[in-house]
Length: 496
Image (cartoon, rainbow, N blue to C red; front, side):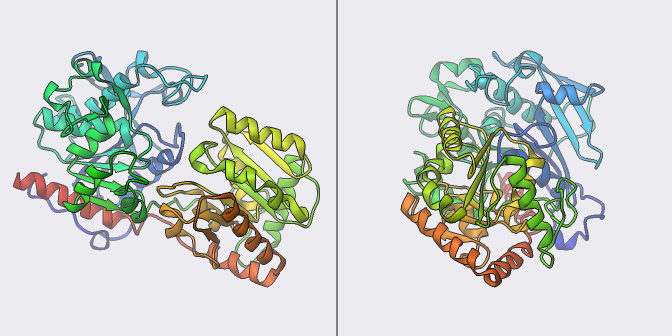
């Protein structure tokens, strides 16, 4: 896109304006429209839609079983050749009711399977995940090169996490003059595979080095993206700083420090879509707003009945999360006595590591009057939990951004969180929630006690709820920042 200028959002008018000519391909392994495992799915559904207001943004997604089942009349627009052991594929196209174009990588033997995006139905990672997501990355690059049967060709590839990161390498190795932006949603997931996969993935032998894809003797998709991408973003400013340190850098802190010193690492806080509004949410049995608490109290009663909890005047705590070590569920378990003391109760929903799920089930079996656990994630149920709870627990050891604390505040549930990553950027301690400084059980207990003290002071509780519910966490703040990153990346290509 040499010669074109990406304008700031303020110069482009409102959301009803005509999208500009910048063609953006958002490459992701999940999207909440059809399938999501974590926050990436939510971001992939909402950020491209926000970017459509100021660009011609489209999404590239693998053709998972659920995606194909939901779109039986999908139009096939191209056939893309394979490379090395990466098979050929078809490219489908769907247009959502609100006008977002999604291109689907159709390779049934790679993606049309039971289970999640990354694992089988027993939660074991697929042993060919390298080929699966190399196919996604290669498809993005082939679109950037231009496909004869299509009249659309991206000017920029926006890659997300390790499943799309190898595209930055393919761009470099195949000398495709299109910039790439890699967004790191969680550095802990890196896509590391055995070194003998090089040839099957069409990775040049000389790229298997410290200055390339090699990471502790393995091929790292994420490192390839960090090394070769034009620009790197993370999902909060705090996380962009944290990952340049040994504590949070997952072994990649040195490379990330170098990228930061080059001005190529930018933190941009995630947003949430406008549907998170308790005054008009169709999933809630009782709607409410910052001026009317009767609806929130009625939702709390409904939540207790739905989960079989006893009637109490104590506070209702919630966990809505992936049930993994990162999220600090062991800290929550260690704080159970502090939570249920004086009539407190806890509702948990999510899925993840079997040992975490089993520990939560055991706690609920011991205190069925005060603790309820629902394994699995269902968004309408999650919305009802946010609406009915008084406090949301987020004792994450690290949290690149986090979305649940934003949802909770919009629904008047005050988050109790470790001050890390995006949690510290989105929670105002003592005003819209409670932050604690160390990921330790005693620190969490101290914050819970602070929250319980506020719960007893109804005027203070109401003031905090009103402040939290009036906060805006939309995408308008993020779009101009992304446009600035795209402009820098385009400038690097133009002057290369």
